[in-house]
Image (cartoon, rainbow, N blue to C red):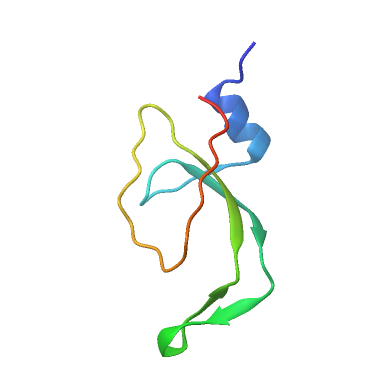
Length: 74
């Protein structure tokens, strides 16, 4: 029997992502940081889980870093 959306959200401990839409949880945050312009620092990399339901949206947004997607289910 396939997983339900509720089961995935519960198992991965996802939280709603209000401005962008969907559900989210950071699973890793690098302890190393890189310096960018104007004193802005960011982690070398992070890993996240992101779930978008059929009735949700993903708002356009701009990132300073590369983003890689892995499709798992649905």
